Amino acid sequence: MTNTTMKTAPAKTGFDKAKWARFAVLVMAGGTIYKLANIKDVFYVPMQQQMGLSNTEIGALLSVNSIVATALFVVGGYLADRFSTRILIPLGLIGVGGLGLYMSTFPGYGQLVPIFALLAVCSDCLVWPALLKSIRRLGGPEEQGRLFGFLEGGRGAVDTLVAFSALGVFALLGSGAAGFRAAIAFYALIDIAVGVLLFFLLRDQRPESAVDTPKKKRAGLSEILHAARLPQLWLVSATVFMAYVVYCGLTYFIPYLTYVYGLPAALAGAYGIINQYGLKILGGPLGGVLVDKVFKGASRYLRLAFVCLIPIAAIILLLPTGGQNQIPAMAACLLFSLIIFTMRGVFWAPMDEVGIPNQVSGTAFGIACLIGYAPGMFAFLVYGAILDANPGAAGYHLVFILMAALALVGAGVATGLARVARAHRAAAVREG
Image 1 (cartoon, rainbow, N blue to C red):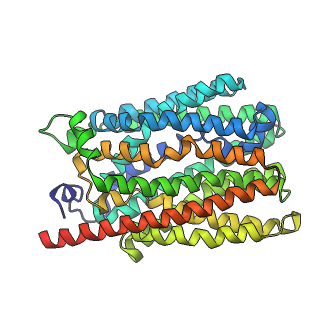
Image 2: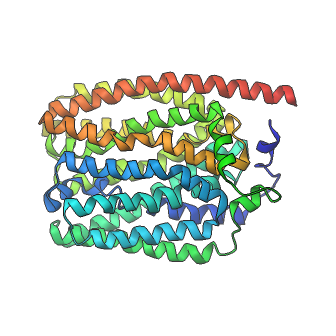
Image 3: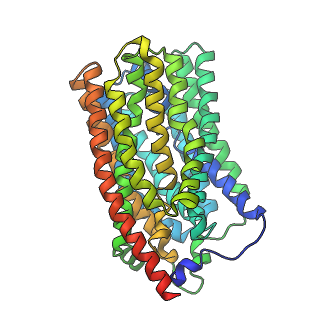
């Protein structure tokens, strides 16, 4: 094991209250920051009905959000290595809340485009790389799967609570325009409240760079170039890319079950919360435990998970359509989503497994986010265009076939990652 990796694993015994308190507040941030950018997860159909948006337009908004995010991930990594968590995370949350309050006025498509772009600035540049680096620093190599898994699980718990509350507001006000407007405002106010809270809870945190490299210059171009030259970083990024491009397809389970299997709007919204958020509670920790306790490595688990997605996609495709098959269709979609969320819970864990140096981990996460989350730039637009060009069940089936094919490619990429991780472990043993 390299010296830089060893620095991430200070010897501690017993229950570290400070560590888990910090973990908890970071989970609060991670569980609320993306609510508005991903409002389609619960309110896809209301977005169409109340805002007058087509599948392609919703896909375009999500693509704009991801393009800006991708362009700024490396900047976000640089900021994570330079500035305090106390500044970055609350600033991003409060910014997202302000944008959400404006979104609740139902601006037109032309105004929604810059809103979704600015949401990416606040969440993906200011918050996410700083949060990932902070999570990694909480434990050593033997804890990475659990830390990132429980991050995803904790985010799922926060997501589910907040989303069900917003859905309750929506239903209470009649499930129409007023309810949707209030639900958006609810998300916005939650972001602002959490941002203010974290500003005070994180007041004693020093800049991450001051912890990692006390006698060195802060992160700059040299650190970015150093991280970019690490071949294992690009393989981690490619694995995340393949998992994320399949994950993007989960959005279409909600309209699929609504239009093809006849789920009512409120039930579809509840399903969407379970599908996109509730499964994080189970999937994230489950993936972390499987990685640390069973597979002894995230790369090996990711390879198997990609393979398991393919037969489940086949089941979804082969199920007869119609209201009489609502329950089997929901079950198959939920199982597919559960596997994806076990993967999302641990797909950052290989950063330690393949030996990414800790002193550039913020920058490395920024680069990996740039590549790994890049499917958001085009996947929603492509999936939405397929649906608009192929009305009815046929369009959804084409999307699901594409997702299965991408999972097969992902299995191949994860196999390469597993080989690199095995070589790193062998080198660490030789070095003693």
